[in-house]
Length: 319
Image 1 (cartoon, one colour):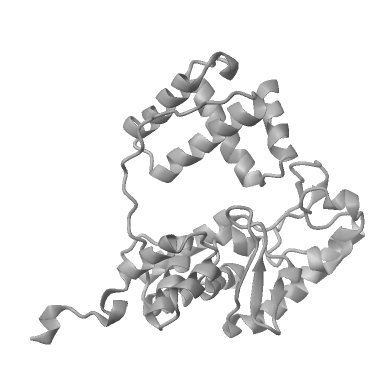
Image 2 (cartoon, helix red, strand yellow):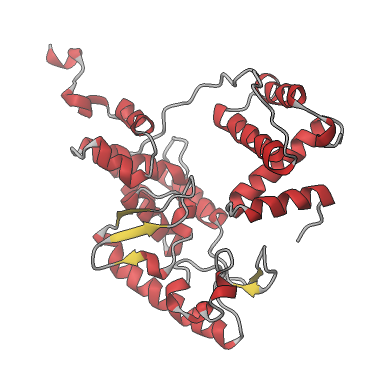
């Protein structure tokens, strides 16, 4: 574990005490550290609401961050003061970032096929599942064998964005290769078990169920090729594959496909939602599959439907 200051280490323990994900932990610690460095390493106890306001306004006005980035920074500092330092910040009145949200890039079915034809191995299956199920890339990589239901063609997403669980659909196209990857994962787990370790387990599950790492249900569908140290228990384990390996494979496939669009893993989630709406799926169903809290978030996809939106066509085509 990398060395951190005693203060940041105490914040880390407060975050873990409340059961936040490791991604949230990293984000909160990052922004708290940025905040401290912005104020020339002044201890947060000696800073207050006006200093938080100045920092957030600086992010918006000088760093040109997106609204959502600024919100993460705000949440980090609210946690720091309210949960760790027991200080109420009150109404901050800082200036919101004005960088507007852009419409998502959406691929046509032909473009999706074109990219997939230039991929192979686990990266191809991951991208197929992102497009076929509407998952985020890390939701897919965190899938364990118990979360896959080949009979009902469904996937259970655990601890997704906002700490929510949800179910989404599974494409029949993926099933035959999923069975192969499931068998490979079980074989790898058995090999790991013979060496005294297994898949990384969430929270305190390893203490409550000491033999859980031997159960196939807890094995990752896309395990890492290397053994690592668990970030909390510091015991050897096998985590899931890192998202950077998928992104690198995707970018190579995009380059080979000669598509001149800004394409990343999330593009396939956008395409999933848009194509479902194009084929007549109601927006509330799409909202549930994506795990959006508010249907207004899902409605952004109606703006990229073109002629398929509500049957509208360009007036030029009626001449």
